[in-house]
Length: 239
Image 1 (cartoon, rainbow, N blue to C red):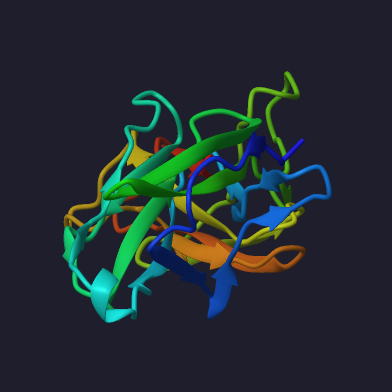
Image 2: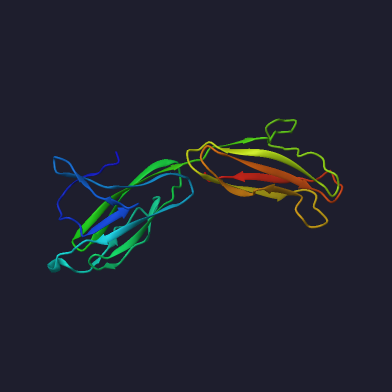
């Protein structure tokens, strides 16, 4: 459950938070228990980071209560995916400042943790939630040309000296979220006299929206006659 039921034993907090212009307010059930407001980071690929800014306001307005207050976050799990990147210190009445919260999952799982912000004798409590997920990519146009099918060998074809041959292919993001990719090429064979890398891929990196595809082109440009042009290619996505 995303709800932590806690008995209300303190006065209303001095600090009020806003996320996307919406007030983060606790709700109270008929039996007098409090349900924490949820700060939801959503689904995020493992290894990536999402930062949310929460606007905090010191809402004390009565003159006899008007004073500045310190805002101090309680320590979060040091090996967990949530962290506080930025938080205000002293806040005068009616002043607003921003607290920056980070979510960076290291594995596939659903995460939740309670964040407590102390201000004097009062405290505000939020429930941080997020899901670490792994992206799902498929490729079209990269055909294994090895005799022992499955070792990932691609034959881009022959090319005349001084010319270029290209192999188009497509990456499809089957994940329900935007994912970045990066193509890594390491030459392991013949080198060009000009010093230019024989193999290239365009675009080398990009963001692919959920459910969409990206057209790429793997090319070989050779300025030296040789049977030994070769490179290792890796398509890297967050996992």
